[in-house]
Structures are given as structure tokens and as C-alpha cells.
Amino acid sequence: MSRIIREAQPSDMAEIMLVMDAAKKIMRQSGNMYQWGDGYPSEAVITADMEKNGGFVVEDDGKIVGYFAFLPSPNPLTTRSMKVSGLMMFSRIM
Image 1 (cartoon, one colour):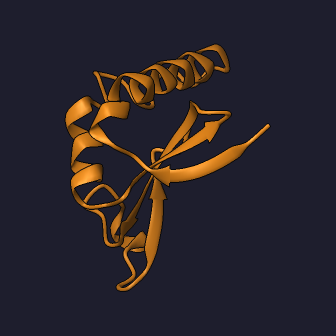
Image 2 (spheres, helix red, strand yellow):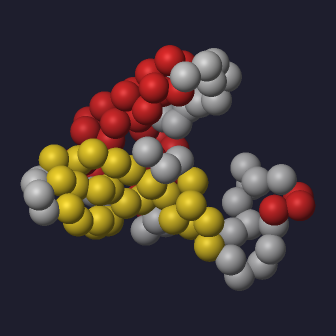
């Protein structure tokens, strides 16, 4: 097995969304009924990650098996207590 992490590209979107759907299914099966509802994260959110050079995919033998966003904090989705200037944060980890 050859596993790599690389920056996500717009051409990866279909595979990224499949990974997102699989992650949501696992969350629902394990009792997490509320996180990532209502179409979140959408293609627009993933595109915004990429535009900030913060979207990454995990590949196993050329197949995308994971996605994460690694973006500068503060992120508007974090709570006030989590905001610390200059830190990086992981978000939307699959």
C-alpha cells in the first residue's frame, strides 16, 4: 500500500464528496445524527478550502480515502474559547 497526503485539486471533488458521504453514513450508524447535516460540508465549502490552499486528500494506491482541511485559526466556525491567534487547525477530517 502506498499512502500519501497531497493538496486537493478541483478534479478531486467527486471523490472527496464520496468520502464525505461515507463519513456521514458512519456517523449516523454510530448514533451521531446531527453533525454535518443539511448538506454540510458542501462542494462550495471544499472549494473554499482549496482556494485557501488548505484542502488535502489522503490517497491509498491512487484512490482518495480521506480529506481534511488544514487552515489558519481563528476559523469562524470555532467557538470563542478555541480561537488562539497564529495556530493552525484541522477541520472536516475524514
